[in-house]
Image (cartoon, rainbow, N blue to C red; front, side):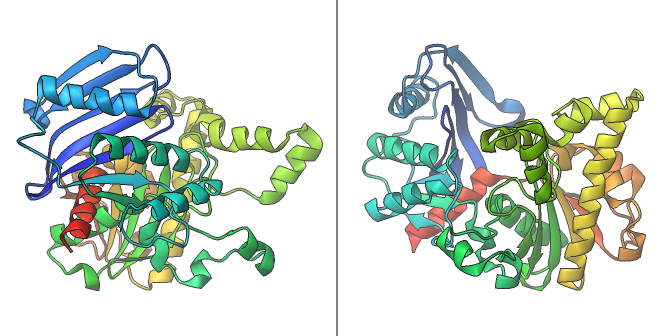
Length: 400
């Protein structure tokens, strides 16, 4: 009775995973893309690791209800049987919970109204998340549905960390504050790091660096988020694949006045044409590293800017925490790029960081230490598993 279906619904995609929480492993998962188009694509994977089998097909999927129907057909055709592995809950990733949701929540009509109302803070995500919830309720009418919010983990931040220094009444009226994102990942990784170190999470002070196409840093003290780099939106903070991260807000006024950019133009620039793509011409870190290694000066600079920003946040969070027991790298870039990890920690010996070059170069599938045995601050690589974290939280709610 520990099987949970995890759903991550986008505006034109549906990602799902059937998770055995007790075993900590997926039984199956899949991705349906181009929802609303005639040339949709669907993949369904049974098992995991070397034994996994993936089945692919092209199929028209007009809406999210049709996507869930396609998912059920895939389980029936390829397994595992949902009759034999019936989920006891459906866990939904919801991006924005605002200041209203600080823990996983059983979905009711009122919760759906709140998710919809919070779409003003996440117009690209919450409506799609809600569409997935409604379709999933049609597909699984007798199962409890649980919303797990990206922002919930960061609701423990103190006011000094989440408050912006603008007119207070205006900020309150329009709900302008730091919310933070990647919360399920930061929660999972900080706890997995404690397990690896065989220390209680309550006594650890950790900096988690979630480095993927989207990237964020989080200071975790005693298992609680006390500071994070993303802000009211996922744009603030670290340099990312296509997002700028931190930028002087007066630059936006300058671009409006001198370059003729309107709000939509600025939005497009900062979210889709900036980051390492804007600097180095490559939005994928693997391509950027290859170009930098080949001597491309733009790519070299982009890599330097990217890792310079990371070091700045590590230093700032070390000051906030007062002590750093571990720095933890996770997500696509964090788990796989030895070069990014090396450059991000360069010059941090004064913080007790000693990177072991050979350990850093070695690849592995599980949690591993990449610092020297003498390093006062542990440096770890811990693979994230947001689906397992969502499944765990959903199961905890329904078992209460």
